Image (cartoon, rainbow, N blue to C red; front, side):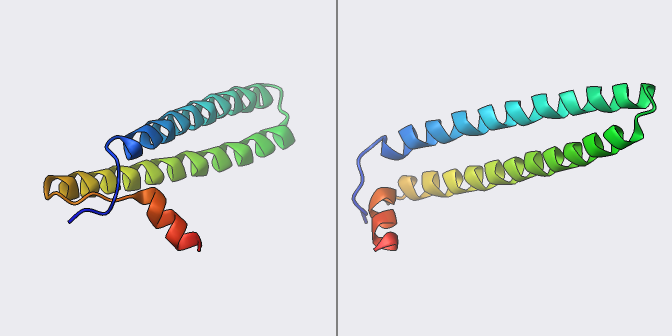
Length: 103
């Protein structure tokens, strides 16, 4: 069974997604590190209001990092399913499926 696709189509898009996720994760980690520095500085200066704000921001960043982790796990699961389908000779045209879904 073949659902029209050309080899490599999904791989190119997949690489873009990987780069985007890696960039987002690096950005969030850098922001979290800065928050930790600001929390330490606020603690040393006894600026508890700023400290509370930075802790809130850090919690938000942690949630964002956890969400990225969940997305990556789902992506890996999907890739595993796709590889299994390809081994069975089934190919999927995600672009065509997306167009049908949006119609």
